[in-house]
Image 1: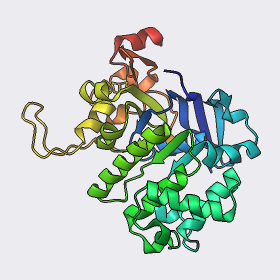
Image 2 (image 1 turned 90 degrees about the horizontal axis):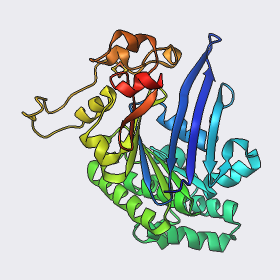
Image 3 (image 1 turned 135 degrees about the horizontal axis):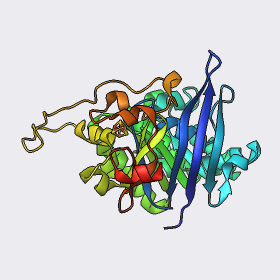
Image 4 (image 1 turned 135 degrees about the vertical axis):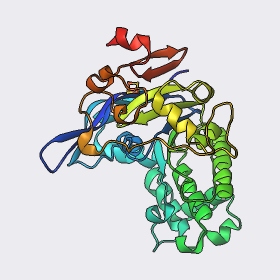
Amino acid sequence: MSALLEVRGLSVEFDLKDGTVSRVIDGLNFELAAGRTLGIVGESGCGKSMTALAIMRLVPVPPGRIAEGAIRLAGENLLDATEARMRDVRGNDVSMIFQEPMTSLNPVYTIGDQIGETVRLHQGLGRREARDRAIEMLRAVSIPAPEKRVDEYPHQLSGGMRQRVMIAMALACQPQVLIADEPTTALDVTVQAQIFDLLKELQQQTHAAVILITHDMGAIAEMAQRVVVMYAGRKVEEAPVDEMLTNPKHPYTRGLIACVPHLEADPALERPPLMEIPGVVPSVAELGRGGCPFAPRCAEAMDRCRQDMPPETAVGEDHTAACWLYPDAEAAA
Ligand code: SF4
């Protein structure tokens, strides 16, 4: 598998008001090939969305900055690109679908104008061609009567249709990489399933690489071939999806999987229908304090966990985790 997108040693820092520096992403590595989907999973505040902003080079500077690393798209390090080049990359090569379309769509322009503007800006189409392209994209995302809907405003559409418009906008320029940040969180369950089906169908047609950012392991199982679990700005585990779901190694991943609701208690696993991971993710000010950041919430924490950060090590074939429970961690330290 040759990588289309490669993220190597990515670290993002923010200056805090008290003069200290918080490392909100710390040494993140992953790669993704064309036509494949990588899930990035974790609770709110674990660094998933910041990873997406870093790939788009949209980390707010100041107070933030990309401190280290490389983000290579088809071999080009985006961290060395000029701002003019990045304007070209955003939308054209790498596109993003956000969680809440109402905050991303402009309420005073028709959806046709908004999709059309993307292709006029990035592909130099004229007004008439851009409108035709907008209709074509609305049809591609299964919006009924696209010739009529193209002149409607966002508030005239349902939540599910607005999310379809966001997908149409994101895919209008046929990007190589699509980042979907919690794309179905604001939608009800049946509409979520439709949006996932649509994303998969469009991915098959365009061969785009997709990064699906979510807190929902169910969505990962549905969409992705591979998954990265993040906690407190670090990758704590990475594996193919089936392996991760059946053989999770990191205590945090096991907790996330146990949190997926079950219709009935599972007597074999002695677990109730719904579980929770006790405690909360560390605040921005607490990041990077040494030791495993999950230690305050981990039932298996040992003395060493509170002192030293566990390195990422192999815990199986094509499976890594950062946890002192595994013997290779000692050798890698
Ligand atoms: Fe738990 Fe220690 Fe592993 Fe961290 S390193 S997840 S505290 S066992």
